[in-house]
Length: 436
Ligand code: URA
Image 1 (cartoon, rainbow, N blue to C red):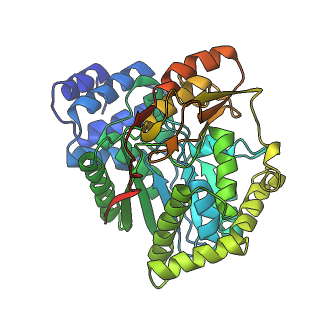
Image 2: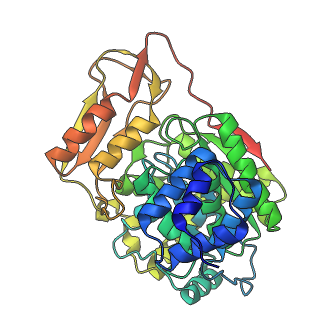
């Protein structure tokens, strides 16, 4: 049956709900290029304000999931578990986590996304590795999973094409932060991976799409329940995103820090979160007796270099140069650096993830329009995080940039990120809750 897109937009705008058939029609027509971007953007904006009922969300997610092929990974003998984050600033966890977990005997068919809004994307970070390809056809995807236990890819043309297109459109049309849109985007991709279990990292705070624990919990519960209705066990962790994760923000910057985590030399918060999420993956996979056994296995994979080894093999299989693991100077870099200093002494009360994320986008690390290319070598190193003491003129950040225009656009936002206090400040807790 055919529908009028302006009428469907109007129904949603005015608080009505759409039938499963109408929602399937929207996804099918948009995927077939029969609905222009401006109408889908208007529809998505109506969803931002009006939300979706449970029935609408189930139908929308299913339509996205079946907008293309669904992987059949039954040939993979190992348990298949993935992890996905709702997006944050400096959130590079997937990169060190996936090889470590794969090294412990779990298969990870990881399909990731690009940067969205002020948050970075795993694909953009992986593509800083010279030659690394994130587009694999389903056959190559399955073969690599069987051989190496890990694939780090984006959605190909045929896997969840609706999300690939809607995701890019949401990024450029201010239509990211709505629970049904985030939940359907993530879960359609993850369910297409034919998983035995999924660990979700739901970010909460200024740099996340969910700003408080209540909305983060609602998002996590929505995704857990979508998983349940597809017989896929899902565990969601609520984690802090009020300040950037780790010290590096920007694509090549974050790849360097990811490699450090794999070597056991990463910053404490990034390492801890990698271990917490990774341990849950091992437990879900049934390859660890409990969380402490899982942690011990992951620690051993760091110490023995087994995680680095898996990453090297995956990089080679996907056309990249594994020498970056030994020599991170092979990654792209920017021509210039600029140091941001503390305007006075004190203790860091706030290092605002949103301001750091937005300034990274202004530098060129993320996209302002759907077609924008990112600048892989630009980024920000954060020297002062919540609880740190600084004296006047201490460096709080180092900016890597290529043009003065980039720097001038970035600095006013970046400099507003730090709030200093006269009194000592406690570091913020990293794990804020759990939903399963
Ligand atoms: N990650 C996704 O894959 N989709 C979203 O909408 C947000 C984060």
